[in-house]
Amino acid sequence: MLPTPTKFTLVAGGAEGPNRLNAFDNALLEAGIGNLNLVKVSSVLPPGAVAVDTLSIPPGSLVPTAYGAITSETPGEIIAAAVGVGRHGDDYGVIMEYSGRCTKEEAEEIVAGMVRHAFARRGLELTELKVKGVEHRVEKVGCAFAAVALWY
Image (cartoon, rainbow, N blue to C red):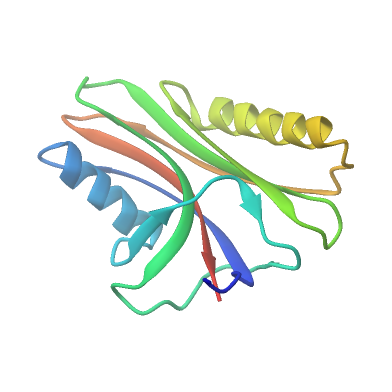
């Protein structure tokens, strides 16, 4: 059985690259988690997990991460990604992610609405909401990336 993460952080980055994969990699580097192996997880924040500004994680570690990303090869296009974390006291929480052809503000508004909906569906009161997003104007090949990284 894997241990349950006790910490989390919200990160976001936007970047260019010579191709889609390098643009994605560069966005991860911009977000501060480019030297990690991201293990994509779904939408539940463990009970009692503490929000921190940064996580000290050894390079190459397998890191549970909920993320949204978008790449584009349309010069001048604005792309954005955002993540949201909602909590009910010190109980478990919900993580939502979004990416699209929109502004950072629009992506953050959409993801906040997704968190609110998830709490309403669960019949829980939303007592804390954290949202982080990024937008990127594509030059040649660009990527917008936002994530909630979980750690121990």
